[in-house]
Image (cartoon, rainbow, N blue to C red; front, top):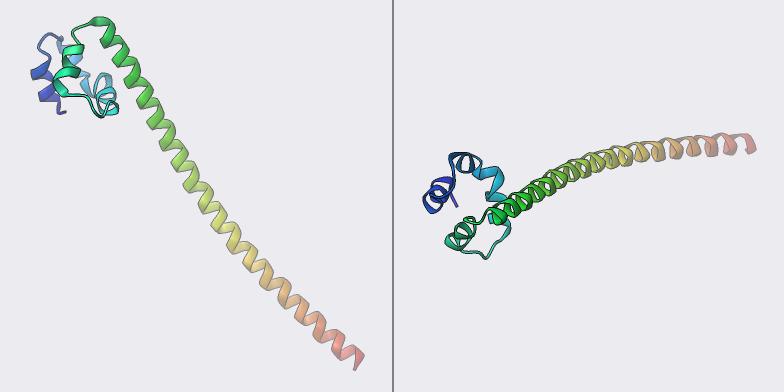
Length: 111
């Protein structure tokens, strides 16, 4: 729900609550996927429910931050893995070349 919709449905909340909608209320509302906007806003008349909703919103935001950090870490590890694979391929080619040269020298020595 948009901030303006929230403000319209919650005239009983103060200006600070409305200004902090995106941090305090929206994450919990979005996390409760099947709740009606009017029902959600009506529940906020109760101060204890508002405290709970704020705590849930904080938990959602913390999880999103952790998920973002993990995604970035995975991308970094994938990049490192790709670089290591390329390095290993280069080393395989170098070992193969050394082996071929050794075989050639041995063949010439025996002949």
